[in-house]
Image 1 (cartoon, protein in one colour):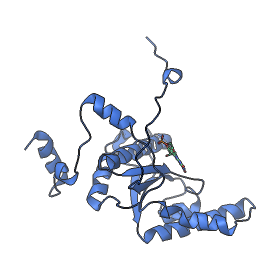
Image 2: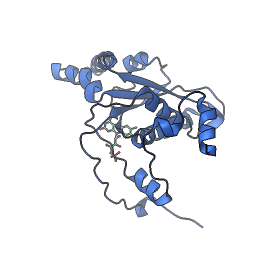
Image 3: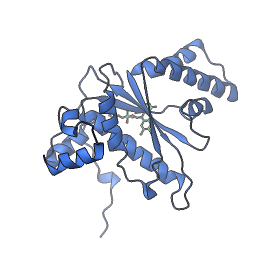
Image 4: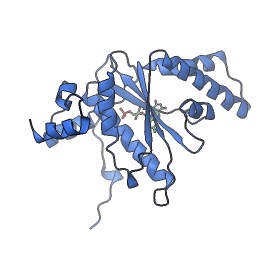
Length: 219
Ligand SMILES: Cc1cc2nc3c(=O)[nH]c(=O)nc-3n(C[C@H](O)[C@H](O)[C@H](O)COP(=O)(O)O)c2cc1C
């Protein structure tokens, strides 16, 4: 047993070691690992199979390792699948209706159907919320950023286990009806709907990115 396995066993108690929970590691040379990270693409058209509970928990463990000032753990993960997606759809309809009333707009049948069926675009959704913790040295924006990092770790860990995802929010995600559905307060955030499943298509190759206009080196 390697030190890595020992560490994994200690961390996970009776759970199977990581190497038995996932079928394939991403390649671990620096070049291959960086290429693998850069190959991640968002995939909108997702079907079964969805990850198992063990695979989801493995991804959430990765998410919970992100930089987190004062270890406040401001993130929570809600896994919605099967018929529960219809309940989420109803919360999105309630949100759309309340938003329309507030903004003096009419909601068409098409708009209602769109909101209702949004969660059906994948077999499984992991909603990541930020429960803002009161702390003198850690303002809400740091907690939101930590959640963003957690979402990215979650996405990469799902990819490592063979699944595709897309991070969606949409204009309804922080409407009161949606916050109430996820049991978060008015000052908390619904930070991501990570639509998760298997894509019938391969992830398209990303065009090379010119980072030159994005960076300044100083010395
Ligand atoms: C906070 C956040 C919210 C997003 N919300 C949506 C969304 O509601 N709908 C959508 O199509 N893409 C959304 N995106 C963008 C996609 O997740 C994705 O990054 C984009 O389609 C580019 O694809 P790529 O990840 O393959 O480069 C969001 C991204 C972030 C970071």
